[in-house]
Length: 464
Ligand code: SAM
Ligand code: F3S
Image (cartoon, rainbow, N blue to C red; front, side, top):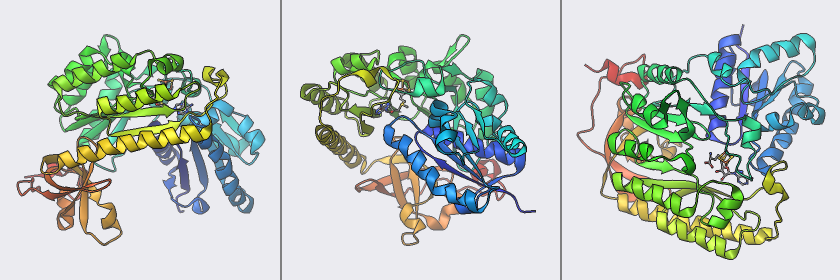
């Protein structure tokens, strides 16, 4: 019998990408489902949705409409909706799209096999959007390693209640996974050969486990053999403690890059957003970090055109971009989210003005990004080799690509050594800064390892 196929469409953030992987793991472990990129070939179709902005939310319903016919031609096809829209809308999704079979939230994705079975047995749509908190992690299979880097969720939910944001309502309040569980998962991944781990959560620095906080968690993770690089996302400026900054002085495995959402450069706007910090407090974090890590690169999130944002508020945001030298950002025009406090604020700025501000903001970031890329030319960078470069995949460059600590992609000649180098940390010299990527050359002292056929990402374990 051929295995049943699973198609997952993911919207939104890295947490959702992570959750989609877990959905695939759970259904593979319970029913042997294998993933496909083709919805028409799938037995189970899942949408993992995002409701942070209106556009993403509406897209779900248009995409659902697009797979409806698959169910009409094969009634056995099962359609499920998970993620934040599911969490917010619940049974209303089935009311609007009656061909949906299963609705589940970010904290009930581990119950998918039961929900699907119940749907098939009863013939009735199943909805479970409860928040059973930590139960999820006790029911997820151990992660499978498919590359040299992996993400590990350390905490879920958010209790910050920024005035514009739906996440606390869709993902529930903050809760941390037990320390032992996190460390066992990272150690297991390292044993399978991963080199880089990304610790995930809406506010990772809200992590607490007894007397341990996020700073101590980082120290424990860095001590796990095989872990060579540590990233995390997202942290919040409000809990960015001196203890956490001090860890940067002690742990070289912690990358020279930090994504720290600021949202606005105006204290007035930050207060109305209920962010819980001022611009000077944010800048103080960056100044103290750069004292211990002079080269740390900073990226951030901005919301442009928050209700009541004046031209002067926006100018202050542009000034902050220059002061901090952010070199990347996720920046979007404010999207009104019903049910959040900001939804009731007067919002008189025309959309065209907001879009013009967004374009100006993004141009300011591009200037910084270009300056940083130029400054990297001539330097030696340690990169984690991820695979063929994008051009290489089209078959015309034969190059490999690796990622630097500060999240830049470097393409370099070396395809002939792909089996030996993919999944390894190697040194390259940056030779050229292009628009979005860097070009480099492999340094001759890059390690030559014995390749282990069974474990391509654990090659060092097979080195002689
Ligand atoms: N934990 C993070 C932090 O410290 O702010 C943010 C997580 S939030 C899901 C991701 C980003 O979505 C936010 O940083 C914000 O820029 C954006 N976002 C959230 N609500 C939004 C809204 N109503 N309109 C536009 N962007 C929004
Ligand atoms: Fe949203 Fe603010 Fe939490 S942006 S995820 S409520 S920190």
